[in-house]
Length: 231
Image (cartoon, rainbow, N blue to C red; front, top):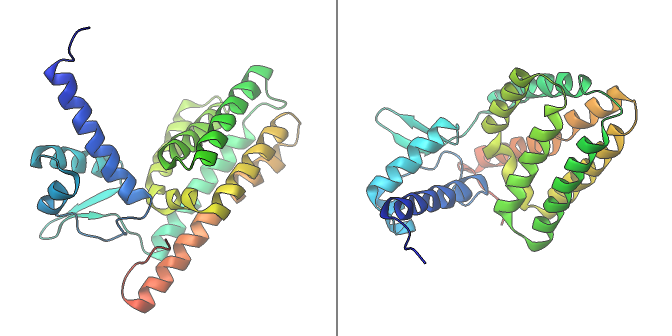
C-alpha cells in the first residue's frame, strides 16, 4: 500500500479545517456577527494560521464570512430588511424555476430525487448535520435543474449560498427538519402530476420556516443586545 503524498495530506487537513469552521458557523455554534480571530481559531481547531486564513478566504467567497476594514473577519449577519430582500429574490427565482419544470417529470428524474431524499432521511435519522445539509442542498439543485435553464439554476445556487447562515441551523432543529422532509416528499408527488402552480407555491413556502426563524431570532437578539441561538 502506498503512503498518501504530503500534498494530498495537507489538502485533506485544509479541507477538514474548512469543514469544521463552516459547520460551526452554519449550525449556529458561531453566531452571526461574531469576530473570527485567527489566533482563537488556530487554537480552536488545532490548525496552522495558513489553514485558517485559507478557510476564511473560501468562506468569504461563499458569503458565509465577511471581511471589513478595521474589523477583520466576522460571521455574516443580515438586517431584517436584507433578509427580506434576499429572500424576495430567491423566492422569485424559485417560483420561476419550478414553473419551468416539465410535468409530469420523467421517471429517471423522479427516481434520482427519491434516491437523494432517501439519503436525506438516513442522515436525518443519524443526526449527521453535515450529511443533512449536503443532501438537502443537492435535492434542491437537482430539482431545479429540471427547469432546463443552467443560468437560472446558478442564480438560485448563489442565493442558496447567501441564505446559508439563515437556513442551515433549521436542519439541526427537530421541527424544522421534519417539515423539510415532509415537504420534499410532497414535491416529489407533485412532480408526478401536472399542477405547476402547486409545485411552485410549495417550493416558495418551503423557505418560509427558516426565514421566519432567522427574523425572530434577530428581533430577540436586538432586544437583548446579542444574537442568540437555541441549543
